[in-house]
Length: 146
Image 1 (tube, rainbow, N blue to C red):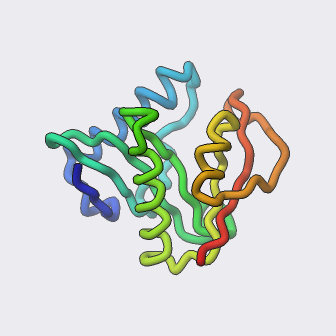
Image 2: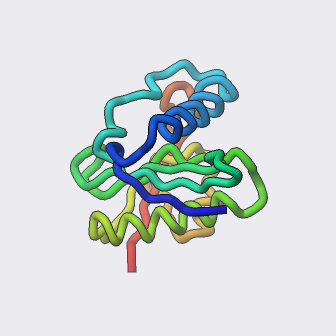
């Protein structure tokens, strides 16, 4: 498994296709949630992903302060293989990339409520009540970066 950290313009067309397919397969199809997955924020993002056998198996994006929130934000966290530690490794790489690329002091996420413990295991704290986003329960969380 290899880690990649790229800006939008550095992604190959194959990588972009695989990223969008993975996101749509899970966030739209698997979760039966029609929403605007391709939201124009990818242009400004840092894309962090793992590849295995030339296939993207896990992905997240990082947005600088002021793009999605007042703090650096991580979103679209996804792993094709679940419950095997890949997601935690990916999120750790994302936190590191947020510090290196955007000098993050705080990282904001809007997490699906069921994933709260996953994020808490990496020291994110819940900062809101549960709310519906595209008819899926979410919570706002933040991480104070060391």
